[in-house]
Length: 83
Image 1 (cartoon, rainbow, N blue to C red):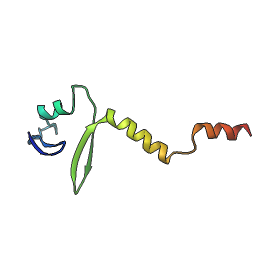
Image 2 (cartoon, rainbow, N blue to C red):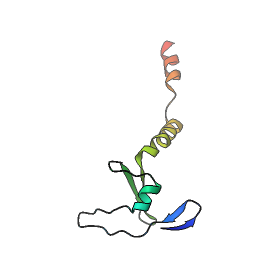
Image 3 (tube, rainbow, N blue to C red):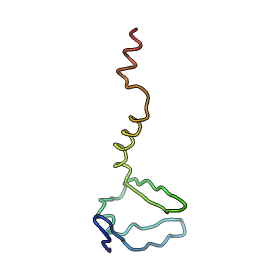
Image 4 (cartoon, one colour):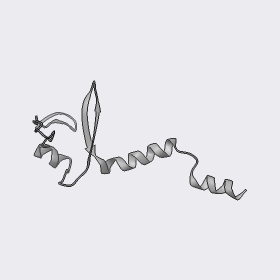
């Protein structure tokens, strides 16, 4: 593992197996607390490459996004239905 900046690391290389599987390096699993059974989200950009993150960390982020673009809060809807 090579530290390349504050909280930035290169964990090495991995080979893709015949079934498309990779092994996440032990140091990366330890740093990011990735355990057997964890679910990871893999996203990609054809120009920038692939990235992955633990799904559990995205729940709060998704709720913020949905709240920002969602419709009126539930309490507003109930006020309208009372009229």
